Image 1 (cartoon, rainbow, N blue to C red):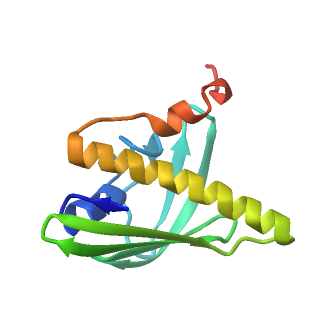
Image 2: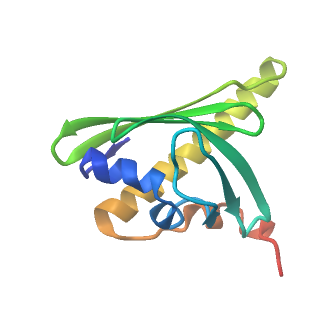
Length: 142
């Protein structure tokens, strides 16, 4: 998806949890750094996971590995000075063919929402609350 902002700004939105929590997860143990483990939580659903940052190329590429050993790679490709193409690849799914397809489809839908939320935030300063509103009946009550 194209985000109409410079690559440095789009990259920072994924590295800096003060920005990421505005369109994706609700809580983070810290900024992404190569070789560092971070925890992300989606408090409304009572779930979270730990991730290892396995590669970072400033303003160009991020790679993380989740606790289930799948890998997510973000590539930030400048199209113009103020346009960045963001490509996300989630790989390493396990199980039989149907299980892998279901995991891939779920991942694709989730990351599409994340990119749409990011686009609205960075381009229009609008918080769409897509992740929280996707399954409001699944929210944990405190």
